[in-house]
Amino acid sequence: MDINNYNELLDKAYEKIPENVKRSSRFEIPKVELRIESRNSFITNFNKIINTLNRDKKHFIGIFLKNAGTMGEIRGQQLFLKGQYKEQVLNKLIENYTKTYVLCSICNKPDTQIQREGKKLYLKCTACGAREEIKEK
Image 1 (tube, one colour):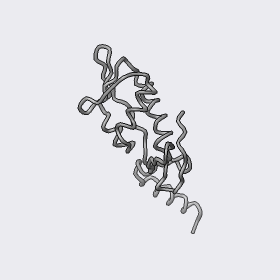
Image 2 (cartoon, helix red, strand yellow; image 1 turned 135 degrees about the vertical axis):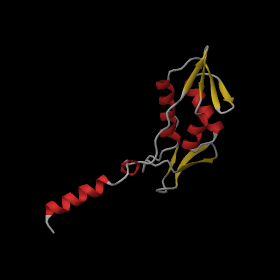
Image 3 (cartoon, rainbow, N blue to C red; image 1 turned 90 degrees about the vertical axis):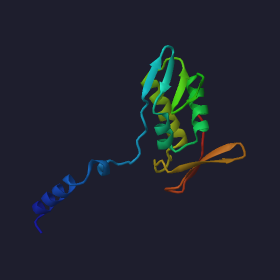
């Protein structure tokens, strides 16, 4: 087989691959959809964020509010935050949470579970089998 013909066939095959398959990871950290009313902020896509991260709402809210330095609660499908926040700040908090409590540090996949042993928390990866103590930042 001619090498040039092989490269052309390879290029044609690569063009037919859907865009979502070409990406190296199937997981994307969700971005905040924010609504501000007077001096309060509402994350309107809170349930989507929780479902994507595959974590318990109480666990996420406890850490998220602590890092945001504010009070808040779930109101319907939204997360209410006391105070006005910029999307970039909240997105950074979600990104930090995801890196600490969701993504495996070995294979970088989101297929993990939080396990508690005594007072320590461990992140157990179901994809590669790694198990690592969670060190809060």
